[in-house]
Length: 342
View (cartoon, rainbow, N blue to C red):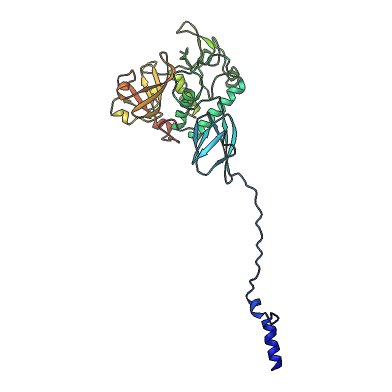
């Protein structure tokens, strides 16, 4: 009896068996931290932007290393100041370069005139790379790529270019001022690079004086109407041949690249960005439609190399007779087409 009482007392004082407490102790689980694996870049893209220009990304969720240069909202990256930054999402990146060498895409009647010697060979190569990149964004060898080439030269190149009436076709056109090659012709190094040689006079880069037989005087070298449209096609990966615009009904020209449609109120409902507009001896390209207005890019002796804006009534009353359906020529490949600038 005495022993029983002693056992109970010890238990009450905390010196008794602890079997129940030991049974409730949870086993310690050791979790090993996973080693952080280095990020392997899956996709890396280059984007060139002007200040106040934006580019639509393929996906959302990107963050900019320097938002003062370029920032991202949803899937849109906007340029703010000259410089370079990286956009990152998981293992995917965009290298964004904001440059003063181009402008945001807009129609302007107040750009300064392109004159001789404004660009070095390095400047010319840099602009060629920007042009090539922007065409690739829309799709090389696509309808959208052709439109992008036209938009770049008329909307983003910071200078206004005059009309130049070239003096013939191959094999004499290069020496007389016609430029049927990829890239921009802003420095004499391009003549050597592209194999442009003198025939009678020249060659001279755009903006430099060259004698024009029709004018009987020196004019700043540039593009005529067929030269401009051909340049857009060539830079997007299409080669129609160095042909003109309506020298004679029997001669194959740019207006014969697709099916012609008379310009009427009804037919204009079917025209698409990238189709051509044709008049006797003249050719142009449609680069935008917005709010019932058609944005037509062309080189013309009265307006130089510019964008003309016209509604249906103005187009019907204009000198244009036909629009040319370019689906067959483009292979029904529209690319990343957008009816307006972005």
